[in-house]
Length: 234
Image (tube, rainbow, N blue to C red):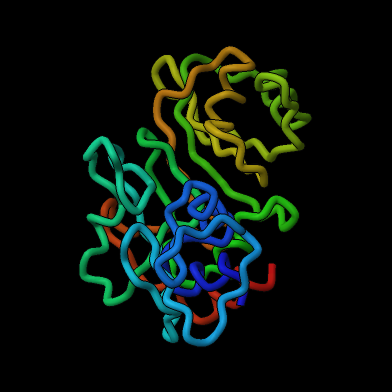
């Protein structure tokens, strides 16, 4: 089994992140630091990540978390900030977040120990749509909405078509839902900034057809079997 898949099935990280761990020298096989990302693990190999021995887990776990503001979407943080792992300490499996939500962004985050599942959800070729609810400064005109739908330049990159729907206007700001299928760093914030409306609040409210609903901030639930199958096959 290829080393990145082995790490992913051990509930450490997605396959893409596993490649980064190898490149950073954080993976050892039989006591030796691995330098080859294409290494195939064979029976009897002892694999360690960050000094801890790992083995693939049989039971797959799929969690939907409503991430609060002020948490980083990582397994650990070198700045000693709170991570999303602090919110799922009672989950009896070694899980990791699928993709990222910014420190100042709240909402729907999927966590799992299934590396192949995580890879599918995050790989650009699968174009999984994600919906965000934003509160932006000022009035978002029809002309600006049209620009967002067509795609805007966010700094050397023009975004793909987006779905944009005004929810309501509030005092000196606008609440709007926007659906994208890309995952560039801080993309939604950059998109609104490109049309002159800075984001004041941002939350992810849906991934594909799966909605956050009334799940309380900081709480999580297990994905249903139907939801897992939908995400695997979308």
